[in-house]
Image 1: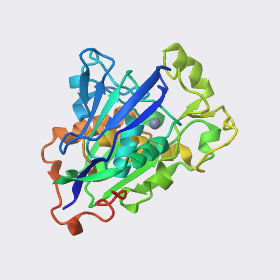
Image 2: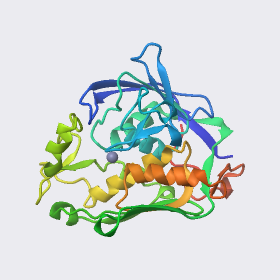
Image 3: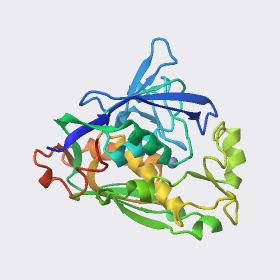
Length: 311
Ligand SMILES: [Zn+2]
């Protein structure tokens, strides 16, 4: 049987929220089978639980934010996508995340710190079948026209692949690889994807700050580019770090479904908003998906039974 996974022990992280600039402490705890990932706002009295789910998403501007029932007026946790991406990359299903502010710490701007943290805590197999969201027919969402066109699509596939293409009107970004295809069954998430950092253009930063966004952003947790070059002294971690970060985000945004997909995901210039719209479109059509388990590991797509070693 392909089994569900949780953490073996409790682990903690301290950092700042990239948008709020607030200091935040997070405690990640093991959770029983079928819990999914649940954020618990322990700074509120009484604490408020926010289970991760497609309809919990309450804001997708700049980051993925969840609230109970997707109510934008309710307590929230923003910027969940990099932690969720790390959970997907390690095949983690169940986790309770105590958090004392409304934003997940950005740490180094990628998923690598979360991968390290989760792997250090250890991964435990649980005696319950792992569920996968199997896509049975193509679903596509689109937005804009002409130069502003963006789209995202899910297609049936015995496995889980993600293909992304970016197109930025910025010479420094355009000079790097604009398209990447990643196979989640390859076992290369940690090496190929997890280290890709979020990024911002100097031309956008003043505008975002005036709207109260990216208050905690710096060259310690983001790639910063002006019109011509990357400003971080250490340069890029991958030649195509920008498009790889978009894949890292998409993996996190798709994990909002509460289980890994069995699908081929493709996006042209998409982002958090389109990713959530895509999942909502998938789940709105009962013929488009089914939830499956694998009683025999040999029937699971190659690599997806063992994303990371459990010990
Ligand atoms: Zn991101």
